[in-house]
Length: 441
View 1: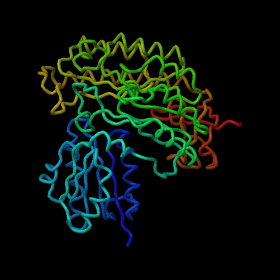
View 2: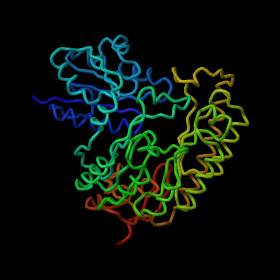
View 3: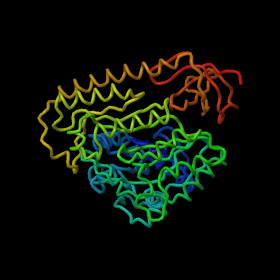
View 4: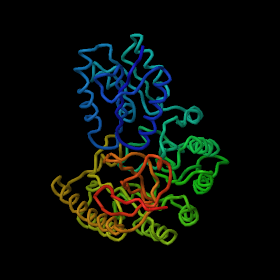
């Protein structure tokens, strides 16, 4: 008898990798993925709790499935990820039609939980962190997805404890995967047809720092870049305090390391950076940016910025605007501060009104939109190498790929170009993508 599952994934790239793993594991126990919950025997939400009201949003999403459950009581509904880790059995009490809750360290147990639920054993909750040795044996492995680009997890958890961040509390402490295992996975993926790999972790720059006898991240980057057949390499996320000169040098030395980096600054004020426990100053950050642009003059940077951290003054905010203007980010992910219960920042008295915070947020958006537009419009008429990833959502015989700067380009082309590098001239620039024209090789 065929069985079907529906999966929704929220939040970060770590969750994307976990969801890939879920798809593979469920396939091994006879489940096929479907596009809607109406036709599913199993519904799963893989959640993220980084943003404020995340728990409320998850409960809201769960409410959409209640009518389906009422009509088909045999339907299994489960929640995994960060919200599941944080809420645990409380979710079962709040949602009487929920069957499974599994935390961030317990994804590997999902097939077992599903099979128990199939046999009538519902209302199951498995959360809590695993010990280091067990975690090392359970790192996400490659699956046989037919894609040109893939994430490869090299580390999990975080030891930075930024005062606003819930991640260490729901993902656990930092642990690095053995480099030999990482390289072997990349080699296997390339043999499978993958042409671009993104090394993934909460703070990849500190990879190996707490592992006796293990290489550091710059050396890992060089070893992965040397894998034959790997056309492109990226990594994320980079904490500025751990971005070493050795790693910066890789951008100038390695042909297949993409000329793009996500480098979250969060704020341009030293006072606020200290309260955030970021571990670097404004001056440190700007020096790092200068070194990056010296090593790789055409590098394009993106960042994360929080507006309205408790106690932020107009002067603090203006320093953020000044830094954004000075760096010239190609993209920025901007957020209004979200109070996360259990973090130190949640205890700081905040007297700044919501209206002022919203006005500041809109001023930052206006500046960043102008900066991004100028950067991407400078590409008009220029020719870029694009790694072709597949058929474009635009249809009409178009393919899509990305430039080294991680910019999506749609262009007319044939399916046999997938997995190859082609030259494309940019003919139109839009907010989130470009239109291009394939050049004769």
